[in-house]
Image (cartoon, rainbow, N blue to C red; front, side):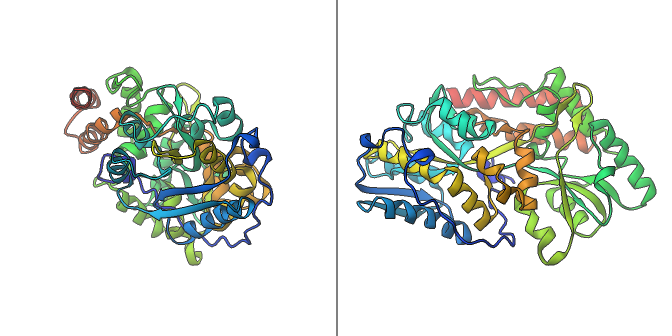
Amino acid sequence: MKQTSFSRVRFTWPIVALVAILLLSACGGGTGSTSNASTVDYSGTITIWHGWQGAYLQAKQAIFDQYTKLHPKVKIVLVHQDQIASKATTAVKAGNGPDIIAYTDDNLGELALGKVVAPMDQYITQDYLKQNYSPAAASALTFNGHIYGVPEAVEAITLMYNKALVSASDLPKTTDDMLAFEKSYAQAHPGQYGVVWNTEDPYDNAPWFYGFGGSYVTPDGQAHLNTPQALAAMQYIASYRPYLPKQQSYDVASALFTEGKAAVIINGPWSYSDYATGGKINVGFATLPIVTANNTPAKPFVGVKSLWMAKTAKNPALVADLMKFYTNKTNQVTMSQADGEIPANSAAANDPAVQALPAVAGYAAQVKLGVALPNTPYMSALWTPVQDALTSVWNGSQTPEKALNDAQAAAAKGIAQITS
C-alpha cells in the first residue's frame, strides 16, 4: 500500500473455499441485454483487456462463453495485461486499443480526461445503474456527468472478529463503544488488543474521515483536510494511541489478529483467506460502528472493479449488451459462488445463495454503507499528504491540527500540479 493509485489497495480477491457449479444464465434478453435487441449487431469481435487470473478468470470466462453460445457470430477475446491504464492509453491513442477495459474505479477520471474511455450514456442510463447496482458501485461509473460502463465487483473493509475471543453481542456499535471496548479489552487481557487496524493508512482510515462528515477531496479538485469534520476524525484516531502498538502498519495489525492477540481487526476481502483457511480462525463479520457525534455509519471506501468502453470500441451497442449480460443478477450470483467476489449487482448481493456465503455477505453488508473510492484524478494528490498526517499524529510529532493544515497545503500543491 505504498503507491498512490487504488491499484495500491490490495484489489486482489481472496480465493476462499467457495465451491459451486456454474449455473449460468440461459437467456440473452431481459435484464442481461439492451432494451431493444434489434438495435444490436450481434457479430464481430470484442477484445477485453483485464487483470483476472486463476479462479477469477475461469469464472468470468465461463460467463463470456455463455454469451457467445447465445450469439454465435460474436467472438470475445480476453487479453491479460499488467499496467492496464498506461498500456491502454498508449494503444488507444494509436488506434489499436481494446473494446473494453476492466480495471479499478479510481483510474476512471484519468482515462476519461485522456479520452481513453468513451461515454456510454446512449446505452446505459443513470436509472439503469441505480436500479441494478449498489449506490457506491453505480456512482463509481459516472465521471463529469457521463457514464463509462458498469461495475463488476466491489470490496470494503469491515469489522472481522475472532469468535473464540469475542461474541457478536459484545462488539462495539458506536465509535464511543469501540474506544471503550479497546480500553476494557486491554485491561482484561494484558498484552492484547480489542480492535486493531492500520492507523497510519489513508484507505484504512477513510471510514472515520467520511463517517465524521468529512472527505479527502471533491470532484471539483478541492481538498478538505483542514475542516472541523476532518479534525474530529483525526482526533478520534489519535485517541487510540495509548491502547495500540506504537509502531503501526498493515502487517503489524494482521499479525496480532492472526496470532490471537487481537479480538477484532478492520480489514477487507483480500485478508479473509489468510485468517480463515484451514480453520485457523473462526471469523465473524460486523459492520463498522456508528459515529456517535452525528449518528452516521462509518463510511469506508468501496473499491469498484469496473468494465469501461474504450474509445476504440467498434460496436458500442454490442459492448453495452455484453456488459449488461455479464453483470446481470444470475451471472453475478454465479460469479460470486465460483470465486468469492462481492457482486456489484444489488439483487445478486441480496440473493439467498450469496447471503449463504458468510464472508461475501459480511463484506456486502458493509459495502451498502460505504462511499465509492473517488474516481477523480485529483485523488492521486491526496494519498501521500493524508498518510504523512496520520503518521505524524500517530508518532506524536504533530498535533492533529498542525498535521492536517500541513496536509491541506501539500494536497493543494499536488492538485495544482495536476491541473497545470
